[in-house]
Image 1 (cartoon, rainbow, N blue to C red):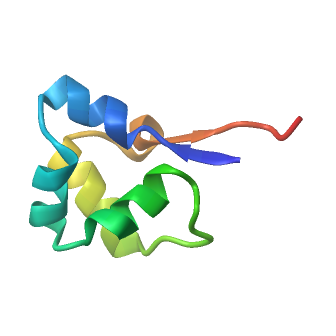
Image 2 (tube, rainbow, N blue to C red; image 1 turned 90 degrees about the vertical axis):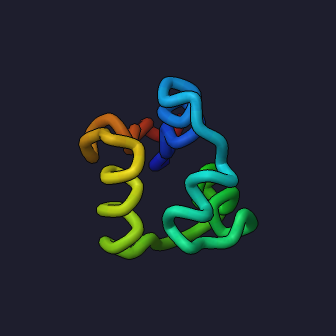
Length: 68
């Protein structure tokens, strides 16, 4: 399972999901879908923007867990 560490990275930067939505021009609903793993795909554009605004690498952003 692919998990995104968006909320943890936002906490480290002391920024809100609202701030990130405004920067990325994405709805709160779509951001929450990414965070909660309710999406089946994500564009490279979003991955790049997430890394840019959260000042992180892909490996810090994404965590892959093996299914039980």
